[in-house]
Structures are given as structure tokens and as C-alpha cells.
Length: 383
Image (cartoon, rainbow, N blue to C red; front, side, top):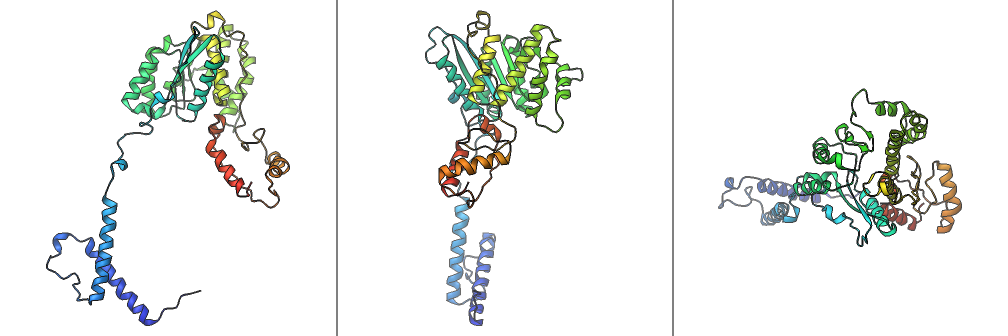
């Protein structure tokens, strides 16, 4: 209900407000303008009003002191993002090579969620493959701003077999990547760069396949990609169509060129798939076909390397659902008939919450934060 105030109460509030305003003004006035012998209440206020103004002044001073007291932990000491992280924390080295043929992978990515997926893939190779093992180290693009990290990146590139880069679109950092990779490009067994600036894309090298003319009008691969891209669809959809269309085009190319172009497109699909299983297959495929000491011995010839598996570009995901649903109808049918009854939730009365997610977290299975959030919603009776 509205609060009614008497005229006396209103007058008293006005006096106190005026005192506070005066005290605030004095608090922000230059100290030199206030005489030490001057009364704290220049308007000759009553003692009670003087005391109230003094309390307001003291509180204001305390607030300003608190705001101005900076702790060392609050001071930024780094010029860029991720420069306080350490790439060595994500280096994977085989614990027991046991005479296996090693190869080394170095990668630079924009999205940090790929770290876990790549590390898991390398650990799977080291645990399961009897003839090969892999060392892997990765850098988040922004980490290359740090000179110590950049020096280590160049050192890692000096003895790498495979380089992978993705989404390198910051000009100054793209220049650093090119400066580090280009001098050793010819000695690399494979160099896979996925959507990035043209100068970085030109580093691509898989056998006879290159993008040396990337950005130029006479680049046949670029022209083919433009023609193959469906209008109004995503980059991934265009790549899927391109892969399906490639067999009809590659048969007109010499065998080795067709094989290498196909390897690049398959590598791209593995990368877009993003899961540890996809990345494992990507690395094994490159090693079996291009890595010195592995390719010529056919030591991975008997390994069953899976085909790329990608999820839809758009869909509805749930952590316990059997798949990503491409239509609302399919998802709601599963939700009402299977999931809600298993939770003991009445789907006809429960609130339905939709959350927009970043697909790359789902691809790479870096989804713990999403899973926790959904579990919390469902624990409160929502779906």
C-alpha cells in the first residue's frame, strides 16, 4: 500500500537531505578551499544536523577510500588474452614409446575447446596403436602474443611432422603464424590449415595438394568450392556437398593429385566433426599416407580408420539423447515419451526451456558446463 507521510516528517526529511547534499559537495571540493578553522556546518546548523552531516561525510570518505585501494591481484599485467596460460600444460608425450615410430603434431586454434579433443585423440593413439605414437602440443591463437610462447612455438615447428591451423583471422597473429611455419613448410609431412586468412591458407600442403594460389582469381580449387557451395547454407554444408561432388571431379585428375585433394577434404570433415574420435582418425589418416617413416612402411595399413562423423549444423541437442534432432517434432516426441517419464516429470505441465548453444562445444565434447546447467534446470522440474 502507499506510504503516507505527515508534513512534519516531510520537513525533517528535507532538512536531512539538504545536509547530505552539502556534505557530499564538501567531500568532492578541493581540500585547499576548506579552512581547517572553518565550522563543519557553514550554514550554522543545529548540533543534531551537524552530527548527521558528519556521519554522511565519514561514510562518503570510507566509500571513496575503498574504491581507490587497488590490490595487486586486480592489476592487469598482460597485453593480450590467454597470455597467462601455458601451452606446456597441454603437451602430450608418449609415456612408453617401446620402439614405436613417433610423429609430432603442432596446432594453432582459435577455439580453446579443441585442446581437449586433440589431447584425447593423441592419448588414444598412444594407448592403442602398437606401431606408432604421437607427440602433440597446441597453442591458442592469442597465446602467440607472448614472446616466450611464440619462441617455443617456433622451436616446436622445427621438428614437427604435421601442422594444423584453424580460424586464424587476426592479421598480426596470422603474420606470426606464417613467419614461423613458412620457413619449415617444405620439411613438414603435412600442413593442414582450415578456414583462415589467405596468407595462412597458402601454407596448406598435403602431398601434391596446395593452396599456393589462394586468394588469386585463377585458383581452380577456390573456384570449384564457390561453384559447389549451396546458396544460403553453412560452410559445413558446403563442404559436405563438395566432398560428395569430388569423386565426379577427381576422376579427371591424375591419381596422386586426386588422392591428395581428397585427403584434404576428408581432413576438413574430420576437423569439423571435432570429436576425439574424428581427430584420432584425422591424425591416423595423415600419418598413414604422408608421415615419413610411417607412410612408406604401411605400418598403419591394417588399421581401420573410421569415416568422418559430423552432427547437423543446426539441431536440438540434449546430453542424454541418442542423437542431435533436426526437427522440433522429433525432439519433443523423444522428450515427452522417453525422457520426461524417466525423470518423473509431467511434460504437459512442466516449463520448457530452450538454450542457444555453441556447436563447437558439442562437437568436441567440451560440454560439461552445458550438461550441468541442463541437469540443474531438470532438477527444478523444467524440461
